[in-house]
Amino acid sequence: DKMTFAKPFGDMLKEKRKLRGLSQMGLAMKQGVLFVASNTLRRAQEPTLSTLYAIAHALDLRVMDLIEALPEELNDMYN
View (tube, helix red, strand yellow):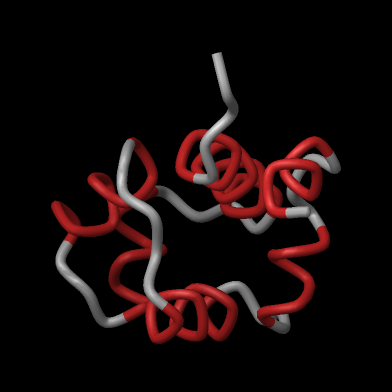
């Protein structure tokens, strides 16, 4: 099966969120989005650029930090 972006992104987001002591609800509140949208994003949907910026801001990271934290296998998908 070909790896998709959504699952590894969700896993990375969960790790970053937990490192900062944030629940899903806490992250959603910092992002300024509904909990349901945040939970759905973590599970299945690929984020939009504006969502990436909101998540990065909520985690006190740069968007590039989020991208660089993804598995290297994803690079092979897009090369």
